[in-house]
Amino acid sequence: MPETRPYHHGDLRAALLAAAERTLRDKGAAALSLRELAREVGVSHAAPGRHFKDKQALLNALALAGYERLAQTLDAAEDPALPLEPRLTALARAYLGFAIDNAALLELMYARKHEPDASEQMAAAVEATVGSLVRVLADAQRRGEIIDGDPEELNLVTGAALHGVAAFISAGWLTPEAALAGVEGLVHHLLHGLKPR
Amino acid sequence: MPETRPYHHGDLRAALLAAAERTLRDKGAAALSLRELAREVGVSHAAPGRHFKDKQALLNALALAGYERLAQTLDAAEDPALPLEPRLTALARAYLGFAIDNAALLELMYARKHEPDASEQMAAAVEATVGSLVRVLADAQRRGEIIDGDPEELNLVTGAALHGVAAFISAGWLTPEAALAGVEGLVHHLLHGLKPR
DNA sequence: CCTCGAATGTAGGCGTCGCCAACAATGCTG
DNA sequence: CAGCATTGTTGGCGACGCCTACATTCGAGG
Image (cartoon, rainbow over all chains, first blue to last red; front, side, top):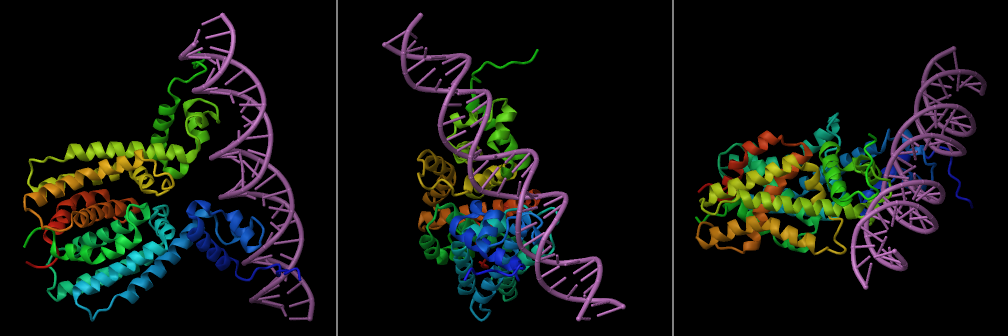
């Protein structure tokens, strides 16, 4: 059987996104081509244009999906019942895990190509992603487990340290194993500081 | 006068790198094209191939130059006479300044495309760049100004936090002004931790 | 149920890109 | 100054993103 497909694919948009995410994982962002995706899915080279106005639009959709998945992952990893340090450690471990398993995707999510419109959806997704960390720190602050400073500043230090490690992994300066092994130390140093006490 | 150039350019390699860095700053990495660079410099579209085996080779050279410039910048900003906190703050400010002024270049430097050969020169350049931070922390440790932990771990926390902030700027989540204004707080929190003391 | 516009997919073409091979001009070294 | 290696030119190949014109299918209003 010639495996003929009906003239209309059915859900080309989703199929393209799925194929794109697979390619992204297997061969990196540079290997992403609309024409190649179309071939993989079995449609003509111009078909993707019906669902994504241009390549950047597809990348944006990919990034958006990434944020949503990351937000879910982080949310699931965060247990409000835990004391601050293990709670934060779990969150950190989840973020680094995502960064390891989705290096190219994460890089794409951080590529500031979509500032012009800000796209709203994207902003909301980012917000939701950051939410887990914000919640953990806000709770801790409310409970007096951490100092009483500008929450923005605390979020920044913590988030920056986390993402910095993720970037180092992605850059190849740090093996995934080393990063995961160092999570506890990382969180500990963040909470207790580098100065002797 | 037709401004004729001798058949041989003289220093095409350097001219290409300079043009590339300009384009990188003005229009971003995506706008980098060997043919366009050749046009800007006034040579034929295949001439760059004599100096860079392929596009990636040019990007590598660009990244290498970036590391060297960054290392110099950091080294100049680091004054061993200062006490730890201001010394680290100055270093952080210098790094963020570089990240702000060379966002696209920094992104390129962190793109792990050149792992295969590791290129040696590149590794050395990275080493030199990280050197400033390592030195500051090692000195502080020797003087008893910070705790006595695995230096690698301390370098990681500090470097990650720094680079994380740089990434946030690059992603547009943080304005350069806000980042620079927050440097002191950042370093303070790193040194003193988030827990009350 | 039929019709007709909207949505979706196809075919082909344009300009650009990276890379390659063949050739020309130049510089350098013996 | 002869001959070879270096550097630049020309032209071409295949792939890409994007565009336009056209074909097929779907679905809503008569």
